[in-house]
Length: 357
Image (cartoon, rainbow, N blue to C red; front, side):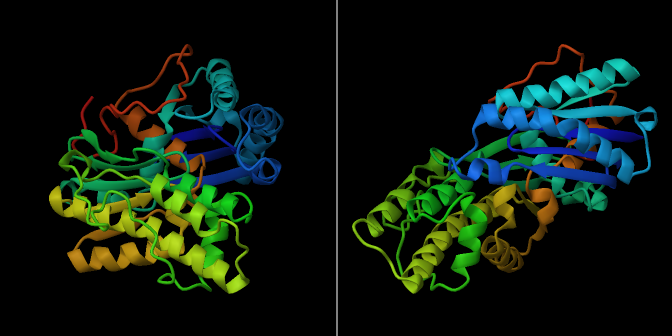
């Protein structure tokens, strides 16, 4: 079965063709990063306008790469939540038009779950083995930072999430404070490589590192507002030299990433998960990937890092995940709604080996 996936939840217009959930036939992404950089963040109305301009060429290019036409597509999938409503509406309208015109199934996809699936597009064998479950997923991006435990029967629970800023948001805000540009994540990753991560002792929220006990209900939660404020004070009324800037950035990055690593490790041991997967845009960070690899080896867990091409927003994860819903005979109607917010009830995750309708 060939599924056409469409992604337009934020500032990437993407399309992909995926066969049977794992064979990516073609994938195309049109990024709006440069358009929004001057504003220091994504402007929803501008994003929607760009999606309108790009969606047809992106889908046409994807079909051409795969040497296919729409008549050879068996189903269409689209990100329906969460995301920026003006942006989501563009992709959803286009997908519904294709589904109606070609009389093929339509599948609405949760962007959050799709990111988790992105880590497993190249690892179908892990999803087939009940012994690999429960799986712990760290979803870490500009919009979300959460720990999810997925059982072999498909039941999933968010066991930890951010109480304020997402990790990616914390990186973007630090870059803005330092005047480094947008998006902040890749810039901070690059500059940090020349800095001393131990030069500054930035706070590590909700870890007990400062001697303040963490409430049991927040054991797996995150908070990045404190480290952001600390950065603001660290550069107040001063202009750091290039090396001082690199040290600040490296120390800040370490503070954010060390929290992600420690919380993930703690949750993996607490919930006895043999496999840890890491996904979302921040999963591209080289420091995070290195430290998580070291920690997973230390605690004896298999680590699945989403490939960088599937960390950032893409449509391959949308189309691939949709196939798993379709094999359970699950699809959506043309009146399928969109939503800006993440529903914390994730439902049954269809790619789990013992998932049932």
